[in-house]
Amino acid sequence: MTDTDGTPDLRFRGGRLASAVPIAFFVAWAIVQSGILGIGDTTGLIVGMLLGLILGMFLVVGDWKAYADVLFDGMTQRVAATAIVAWLWAGMFAETIQVGGFVDGLVWAADAVSVGAALFPAITFLLAALLATGIGTGYGTAIAFTALVFPAGVVLGANPVLLFGAILSGAVFGDNLAPVSDTTIVSAVTQNADIGGVVLSRLKYALVAAVFAFAAYLLAGSAMAGQPIDVDNVGGPSTALGLVHLVSIGLVIVTAIRGRHIVEAVSWGLVTSAVLNVVLGLAAPADMVAFNAPRTSGLVQAMDAIPVVGAFIVPVDPGNAAVGGSLYAGAAGFFPLIVLVLLIVAGAEVMQVGGAFEAIQEFLLERVATTVRRAETTMVLGTALVNGMITINTAAEIAIAPYISTLGRRFNINGYRRANILDANTSALGYIFPWGGGLLAGYSAMQRLPEQYEWFTQSMVVNPASVWPYVFHGWFLVAVFLLAAWTGYGREYVSDRESGEVSRV
View 1 (cartoon, rainbow, N blue to C red):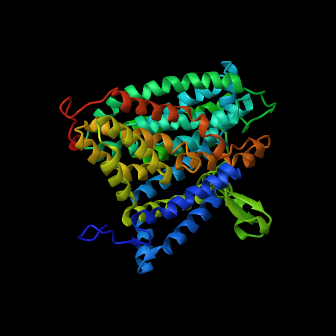
View 2: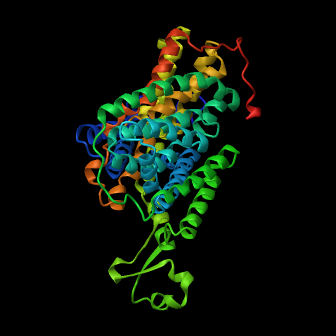
View 3: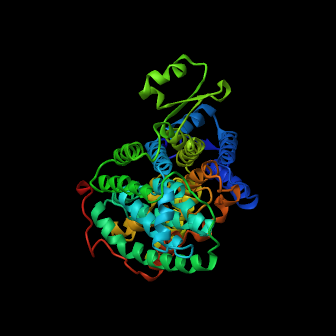
C-alpha cells in the first residue's frame, strides 16, 4: 500500500523502520516475560502487543485514523482466520477424545509394548510427524498431542520439556512436508511452482533433519528419563478401550489426505469420537456438552420427563450456572491466543504498510546478497528474522515471499529451491521461539491439564521459554538449509529443471 511515488501511505517519525516498533516492542516484552522472568502467560503477551501498538501510534506522522485502519485491515486477513479456525476445531476434537479415555488407552498401550520413558519422546516425534503430515496442520497437531499424548508420557516418566519439544518437532515436520499444509501451499504458489514438485523436492532436506532429530530424542530421552507416576487411572473410566479413538484420528488423516478441507476432516473426526464415546459408554453426553443449569430452573425440574434433554443438563447451585463439556473447554481454552494472533497480524500489517519490510529487503538485496551463496544464506537468515517478528508462520511466509522470489530470480534459482528455503524456516521457527504461534497453541492446551487430571501438578506445565533447545527437528531443518546454502547441496537453477505451472496446483 504505497503512493504513486513509492512512498508508504503510513508514515512514521524515524522513517520506514519505525513501523517495526510495535512488533519489536512485543518481541522484547515476550523475551522479558517468558525468557527472563519465566512467566508463561498468553494474556500477558496480549498486554505487551497492545502496548506495542499504542506506542507505534504515537510515532505516526499525520492522522492516527490511517494507523487504526491498517490495524483493522490486518486483523481481518484470511491468514489469521485460518489459524483461528484450525485451533478451535482441533481443540474441540482433542478434548472430546480425551474425555473418552484415549490418554488412558495410550498409557495401557505403552505399558503393553514396553515403551518406557526413555523411548517415549522419540516415538512421540514420529507419531506427531505422521499426524501433522496427514492433516496438514502443525498447530492442530501441537494441540491434540499436548492434550492427549503429553500427559501419557509424563505418567510414564518422560521429561516434560523434552516431550513437549518432541511434539513440536513432529508438528514442524508435518507443516513443512504436508501437501495440504498452508505453508506448503503458500511457498509453492508464491514461487510459481507446483505443490507436488515442491513436496518431492524437499524430501531430501526434511528426512535428513528428521533422522538426526529422531536420534537426538533417543539419546536425550534416555539421559533425561524420570520415574513413572503411580496413578491408578490417568484420564477416564477405560483402559485399552480408549484406543478406539484411533479410528477417529485415522478418519481425520484419511479425509484430509483425500483433499477435503481441514475443517471438514476434523469435523468428521469430532462427530465420530462423540458417537464412540456415547455408544461404548466412554463418556456421557454431558461430558461433551453440558448445561450446568440452576436447580431452580423449570426445565431442570422437569428433565426426568425429557431424557434426551436431561442427558445434557447438570443441576447445580444458582451461583455455578455455566456451559461446560469438552466442546466448550476445547474452544474456550484458545480465546486468549486468538486475541494475541489478531493483534500480532495487525502489527505485521503496520510493518508492511509502513515500509519496514521493504527497507529490510532493499538492504539485503543491495548490500548482502552479492553471490548465489550469500543470496541463499540471506534467504535463510531473512526468513528467520521475519519469523522472529511475526509469530504466525503462514503470515511470516507471505510477508517474506516477495523478497525470496525477487532475490531468487536475480540469481536464476529454481522455484522449487526457493519454495523449500522459504517454507523450511517458517515451518521450523514458528515452533521454536517462545512467542511462536505453534508453540503457544500447544502451551494453551497444556495449561488446562492440571484441571483435567488430579495428579498433573502446575510444576509439570512447561514454560515456553524452556522448550526451544529441544525442538530438535526445527533446529536441524534450519541447519540443513544453512549448510545447503553454503555448500550448494540440492541447489537447482532454472536451467536445471523447470518447475510446474501454478495452474497444476
